[in-house]
Length: 194
Image (cartoon, one colour):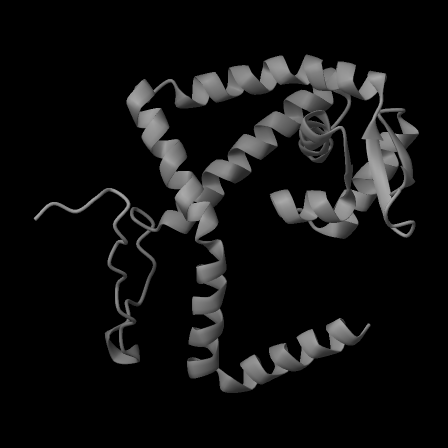
């Protein structure tokens, strides 16, 4: 009986402590590959963007979202791409000083600050876009078009599965390290009160 490509993959069971491997197999550990690739791509992009355009990768990431949305808050940027909100706020401050964005208050929520892309910011985005797309083209050049589509689909599914990773991690920590789990829960409750 054939299964659909969307069928849920079976998850490996949690090994008992005594059967747990003693080392990570770096030839097969997917988080390491994803981290290495992301770090090296980001570092290379940042070096090029700084050298040519005098902006780093954080500014480029914000420019991308601003070009798509026109205006966006630091909270939205943080939620979409996972940047720390304080880092986004610092990036917005720098972008505003360079005339790449204008800051204003949200019409619906006067407490929320919104960044809006300026003409200068859009022009910078359009210049960097060529470099970014060339880097992507070169990166994917080892794949066929069909493999690229498969990769994109797999990455989207993995991205959507990140909440399950956090849930599984919390469950594992609660089972194996209950004192740490209680400290974490107390810290979250404290942070929620502020």
